Structure formats: C-alpha cells, structure tokens
Length: 317
Figure 1: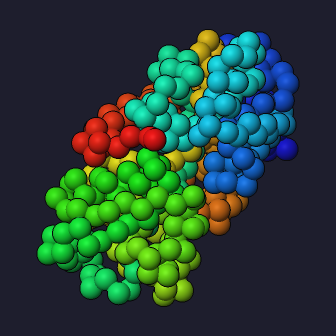
Figure 2: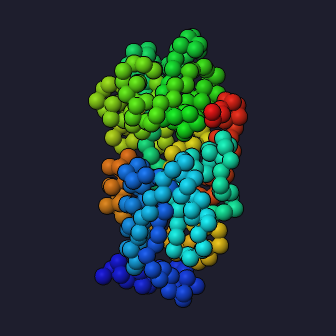
Figure 3: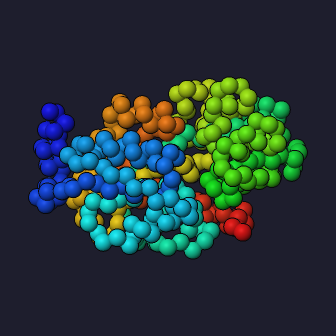
C-alpha cells in the first residue's frame, strides 16, 4: 500500500505535468542493445523492474543486441517518440565507439540522459609470477623491463583494453596488448600465465581464489569484499574516471516531465536494499547520477577516451 501511495502521490507531486497526462499510461519498453545475461541486461532488469513498479506499470525488456550496441540504439532513435520507450546505454556505446568508427546516431543530439544506474566492479590484476604487489611496484618493474609485460583484454578498443592503455600513458610504461574474444578467455589466459596483467571484472573470482593478485580496484571506492585492495586512483592513476557504467537514455523529444519522473523512480529504486543487494551479487555497485550529472559525466569520459585512443593510435581493423 505504501508503494501504491508513493506512485499516486509522491511521483505526481514530483512531476505534475506528466501526471496530468497520466504518464506512464502503458508498460515501459526498455530496449537493451546487448544479448540477454550480460551485465547491462542484468542491471537494467533489476533497476527498471523496481522503478516501473513504483510508477504503477510493468516494464517490458527488449534485447536487440549486435554491433556493439549500435543496432539497439539505432532502433530506438528511429522509433516515433511515444514517451514509453527507453534505451540502456554503456560507457563504450556513447563514450568510446564514436572515436573508432562511424555510428548510426549522435549520442549528444539523438538521446537525452535519464539516469546513470550503476557501475561494474573492475580490478587491475596480475599473474602471481610478476614481482609486484602494488601499482607503484608494477610500474617500476615495467620501466625496468620495457616491452616484457603483456596484458589481455576482452577485445580491441574495449574499455578493458583502454584501461591498460590509460595506465601505460599515465605511468610512462610500455606493455603489449593481447586482445581475446571476450573477458572470460582473457582472464583464463592470465591465470595460465600467457599474459601478465588484465583490467576486468572477470578477474575478481580468481583474485579471491588466490590464482591472481589484485593490485587496484578500477572504481571510485574499494570493493567491500576486497577491502585491502586500494583503488587505482588512491595509487595516483586513472583520476579522470572511465568506469564501465550502465545508464538509461530517452529519445530526443521526450518531454522533460517524463524524464524527471522516470529519473526519480530510478533513484528511489536504487535506494532499495533489495536492489542494491541484487546489483552487488551481479557484480555492480550503485553509482546513480541525475540527468544533468549523467550528461556531464558522458562529456568528460568522451573526451578522456578520445584522448587515449588518439595518443595510443588505437584503430579498428
């Protein structure tokens, strides 16, 4: 009953113009531009399902994966604005891919920011054979052994690749990038000693088991399950951000009142202990940003990744 009261009262007070139009008047269509089961899919379902409940309508999840999110994004861009269709977005989709290839939409003009929801827990991990137990020691070893260290990634120009390139540029070291077809194979290669480092969430179970050594969390805060691993920023690197986050966009032309109402419902959902726990178990933490702050974050990270890509001369084949 309290939830229903919230829907009928509090949300109406937050956005009277939208409420006057009886928004939402039908289910919310959440287009997820990635296949089912991935972190963006899981996070969207956890958060949007609760937000939709608060708004008194169900959420319908529509996975349209392919082309690094471009197929789903183009689909939403080309739909008539109905005020009920939204798009899941990621760091890569709006901040990275635009620097590497032509994309079928303008992230700054074709979509409006609604909310950033959460961020994946990433870790900078190394093989135990590397004689370093801090980022400073790793950098010193890399400088003393130029070109001898290799790091794996989930693929060329992925965020897991760019994290490694960022450290190389900031620390003045050289490592050889070895791309794999996905994060799991890249982690398996690190465990096997085929490479010496990786920057990815998939390393965490191996760090926990002792097969890998975690040098730094790729986040703003330490992971509650790994309190002894300091963040990369605590150790002097990665200060501009660049986390792998997940958020919600609306097509350009969606009324501000609709965006405001949905944003407030998402913020309320992200305060739920149940949602927080589910996200944590799925490998993510709440990093909510409202529409203005989310847009600002996109602008900052778009410039940052563009600089890394240019300085590293990173190009797709």
